[in-house]
Image (cartoon, rainbow, N blue to C red; front, side, top):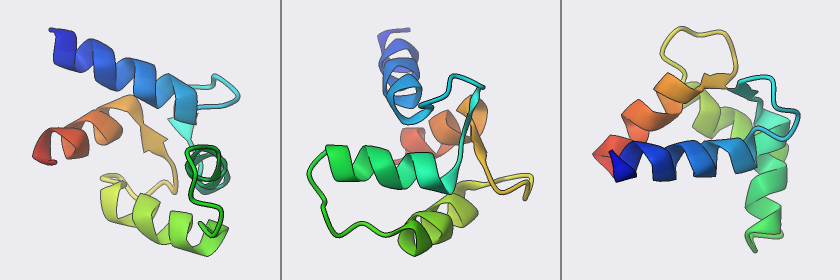
Length: 71
């Protein structure tokens, strides 16, 4: 249970507008704030694409958490 709660807290930090989805721009902004100044939107788009199970171009919490379990 703690694992899903930790994942939710992390997801919420990436979901900057609170709409329940992480866009590539939100992903990039969060990565820059975490210290990777060279993280580009293009890179974020590629990462989101690899984790985006339904192909809508954004990450839902379920997609985010499903992939986080593999790490």
